[in-house]
Length: 72
Image (cartoon, rainbow, N blue to C red):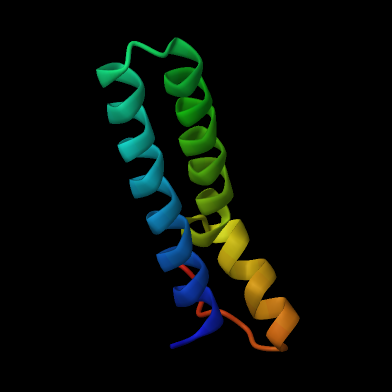
């Protein structure tokens, strides 16, 4: 598996674990757990953004010394 795919899979796993923590916080009426889990998921989503933007793909291609096909 490529490094990029491994990172994305790991971040999705972190998001899923954050959802379980939210469920636990709701069940136990623990607002700090819910808020912390929401912050965790938000940070993971922000971390994922470069993987799906054109700028992120361009930077990755530059690091590898490749060029991307021109957009039409």
